[in-house]
Length: 110
Length: 115
Image (cartoon, rainbow over all chains, first blue to last red):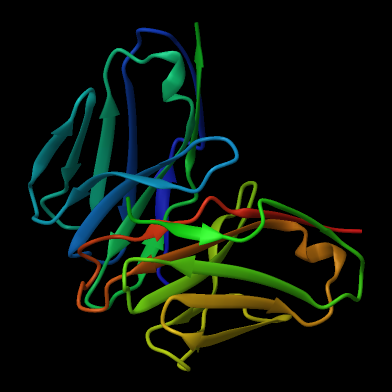
């Protein structure tokens, strides 16, 4: 199936630092989504992007839908301890199935 | 608040047992999905269903089957559990007419250990 390359695999940062992660694909997607999974829970949708070039914010989170439709990034500003978790990107095509990245494990040291 | 509910958070089963993982959604979604999640491998699709009694294989269907007798319920069945099926299992649902547009709503997961 389609593959998404998500990087980095893991990040260890200090509280207050900014974070950036991204996903790339060899295929074009119509939608990009970013999920966060906290320990012991299922992934929860953070941001959905529907248009190439779109830049969307949700509090301290900002995500962009790449202009080529083959990539997306997520930034977290001024990280706090509750930002810890696994962040997944997902691409949506012409059908109803999503393709997921392998996730970025974020650890924030207080 | 809309929900996807997985019946068990933790399960411990013996090798060779038949295991049922249940998932119920209250959003009237047509699509339902079962994933397994393993460290370093991300989310891998086992099976999905886009309608009652309809099912399609995902990327790793071997050793699993599914049942969807009612729209709101999607069951994952491990016919004969093996230790390599120890994993976190996640159920998700989405509306049918949403070509990747609305994303999935996930359950909280079932952590299955096969001993």
